[in-house]
Image 1 (tube, helix red, strand yellow):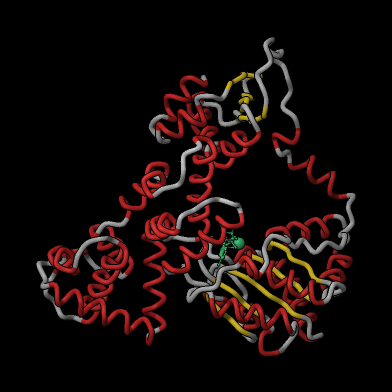
Image 2 (image 1 turned 120 degrees about the vertical axis):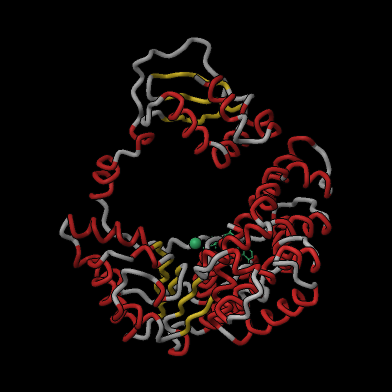
Length: 451
Ligand code: ADP
Ligand code: MG
């Protein structure tokens, strides 16, 4: 099965990755539902786990036509004598819900800040895209509970630093005043805790706990969508904290009013303090982030390589980190120095994906879909505002996201002159400053196109 699996994976991962990471693994079939893969060291194990395990499991399940098949990665050498075929799957492998619950039901809600000490302001790189959110965060850290910034609501796409910033604020508050009762919690975890409290008739304790805090940090509040009971309960907790002058900070992928299945009385509360967006970082910030992360991890990353990666990978910071991880692993493994050519080689598949995605054709398709018009409208001569504006936006996106020249872009938009494209780019740049709706459209499309 493993050999078949490897040959299937050949189509999904680069041969470089296949040879370096996957072929050296030793497979042991434990039983019909479990395969153990042995990695030669913990570094390989972690790397395979984070980069390939999900794909391996999917492929193996499809090949064996067994949706329950699990794959376990361990560090070590495959034992010579095969184990008996009846080896049971351990509980923590199957993530059995009842096992987890029965263990946790005996727990009280104990006070823990849940703050991650690695996420601090010192390693949060500032730039135009996050400047407002960052400085508001610093302000809140100095003066938690201030009416101007309570609640603080931070929103933006995935991988742009919301969670990092949330922890940074929490850590800064705690550093100033170690006795602050402060809790960071992801909204999904909050829902779980509440459900458990209800089931074990400890809801009063749950309420008391959250209403006794000085600072409450809730991450990804959009997960409350559609959970009416949680929203109801949180509404009262929110009010109780707010009225007591306690600081609340929330993050979400959207504006409060943009989250579906959310009660209006709650979203309107979210907006009474300060609401700020974190945008995708621009090139200089992407480069600065790469340099900062490299320095932290003692990677010798030349600036021109950071620039190369920053230029190519635009979607979000998480992707940038992924690229840096890949470069780091390959340089440690091969002992080769980091150069632009080296980066281009080890990131080949990531870069191909980016370049394949963002073509003029693709931009036209997405823009047409977004505005519910036809691709041919983007190439037509019509001056109707409802067509001309999306057309200008599409041209500006083409300039921003592809390496095509003004004349090339014009040619692809119904044989227009390059000055028309230049005008469109200027116009859109101007409108993005003045018209919040257009700016929102722009950001949405950039996100869609670089996802
Ligand atoms: P989000 O919560 O918005 O999805 P995260 O806060 O989890 O994003 O950020 C993803 C990764 O990118 C984290 O490792 C974080 O440290 C890093 N990151 C994001 N923004 C920055 C920044 N401005 N400076 C340094 N690291 C950043
Ligand atoms: Mg997050």
